[in-house]
Length: 330
Image (cartoon, rainbow, N blue to C red):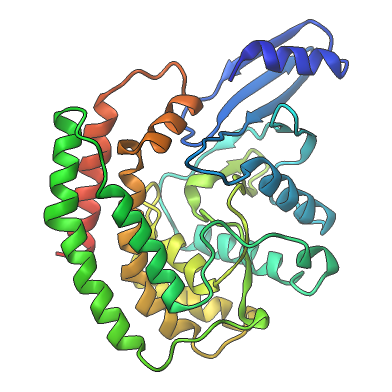
């Protein structure tokens, strides 16, 4: 992010010239700054764009925040202002601590947030929300999504020894295991695949997990990062919740979570679909961990942390992917 762009934008809307900016690390997709102007503190976010990734993160997040705030859902930072030309969002800066481990209390709070969002599924405003990023409404679409990710990783360019190691893992371990799992899943769903009815779909925060939360000073868990949000398969939302690696949720809690949300979503086969899709999404998340080896993913990481010049991140991401895959598919 160009700090001059942020300063110019804030000065244009009347914040004066006593503005201090502090980059906030730890983000993977967008560049985020804490802004202090006099006694006011806010968060400013600029959204990544790349020709290989045409998703409009800015508009998606703006639509979702607007929907939540208009629905009086307050377990999120307050959206303050949106600047589409600059792809900048001005949000409440929430002070607190990020969870480091999943607990039953945290899981109940997160599922409560998901259920609260979906109490508004029939609202007129909900119908205008987009479909989520990589939304899937049939088993065929779920499988095709992972196909595309595995195929992209099969085209990693061997720029250095780290890339060569990633290529070897993809070709010798990830892709063959996916081919087996894909065949097994196709056999398991033969004759039962269908497109989910609108009544069976959910409003999903997407990328839903404790890595995108903070326990604020008032004790409330606050949720953020909705740039992939929208309508989706609730089974996918649940699988993503259990697959995100930063703050893992133990798989043995899956049945409990499904029991909690059963009354909030349509469809009698949600639990069965989630069980079948969990290993599919474990494969997808392994692919996500390897995004840094692809041009768009690498540039997104540089955009979000422009001062980061740590090439060891490739080693770290490959190590995480290998460990995750071996744990899921021993």
